[in-house]
Image 1 (cartoon, rainbow over the protein chains, first blue to last red):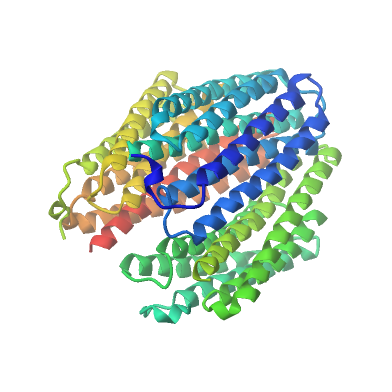
Image 2: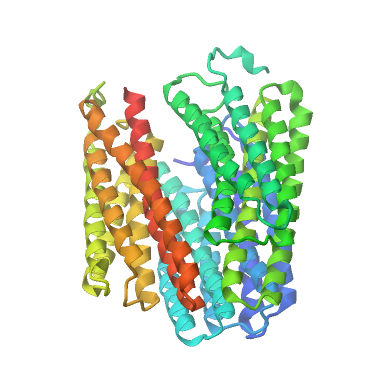
Length: 208
Length: 208
Length: 208
């Protein structure tokens, strides 16, 4: 079944793609911000801007949804997908914010690794979102969702390793408090990517 | 469109107003509890009582909802609004609880400022909830929602400032642990107020 | 009204019972893991396995739900119950994970008490879930839900007592960070049990 059978003027898919585009850009900015070991505050500042733009795209979906009687697929799924996509970039913004509130300048290498996994997941999200509009992309979308789930599992171990190392080696409790939170937030980004992937999967399965 | 077109005997709006009334009272008690710099435990104890009463009002909505076939607006919105209103007072209760569990006697001035913003948001919630029953209040309700959103933005900066100051000036890690949580919870109150405002907005927009 | 009036081949109830069965086993393993005061890592490892099995049972419900047009009761309730049951065992898994990441060997006695309350709640969950398939079990199911709610209230005080003691007696901030989180997670298990009980109650009330 193709979604085009449904009479619907608003292109929700375009709005989702806008959201996932901002996610990719924010994930790339995050990678740049931490890659050098010393925090790149210019790259970090770009995430704030991107989050605001992504917010607008999410709001456009919700406001459209409130006006529409007919939607290309379940209203709840549209709502859940927009929310999950918005939550991803929100969490990236939260980490960036903590890095500056905590006045962190030197980036621990575990976070550099997290940034790479986050970037990979963001690209998979983008590819899942771009495919969801058409059932002919079924295989590609499902593969992207599997990849997102795989990256989420990896990030669980990464967080455990990072936390175990932190608690074992770091003697300053204030530093422990800061980095414990940053690592947990980094892992949460991957969790939310997995949530978004679940919504995409469920949309695909219902149309299959 | 007026809600009165719908045949419905239960006055959900009255129940929502009961909830928002308790929120205002709890927010005022919280302001009194922290205003003097030294914790006023009598005012703090009142929040516990108010939370229990608010809980009952929320339960009345849910139990009514389970029995109703026809509701004045979307069941999900009724559920979401009751839940968000309940979450606001729950979080005020959580902060009060932490203040006593952590045996905090001296109140940091950042929390006094938070209490004022929380009180302002509680009043805006009350005015939004009182208006939602009738589309003729559209402007008033929407203005209250905008105000709640503005206060939430302010509270973000307040939390960042409070945390940055805490991590910079406080040398005792145990104190950092306690106050970090209290500031974050205080900001969460404003977040939940914004959630409630979004539900109210969406109810209004669907009827517009 | 009996659910059997509805034409539905899939036995969702059996799947729920599978989930609650794993919950009981995980809660028992958790009790064994902490009972001796020194961590029993073999019992702890069993929780990881049980969580993976429970995950599969939850996925079976969701995948079935995506394919079904007719369900024995509200789709949202099926989804919410499966999710809540899954969240219970997830949180037990999270605590076990933290205990090993934080390299905790000596178990504080407050956690031993928590394990007993968690086990009691798991048994009540199991009895509520087993009863929900038939209205003739109304009294038994409701009694189990009341018990779960009672245990949740007890766990609130237990957490407050445990945290107050921790902050008063423990001088090492790193230890405070670790155990604060473990106690809060333990209490969260009971919270999620209460969430599951609310879904069960609402399913029963709608059929009453």
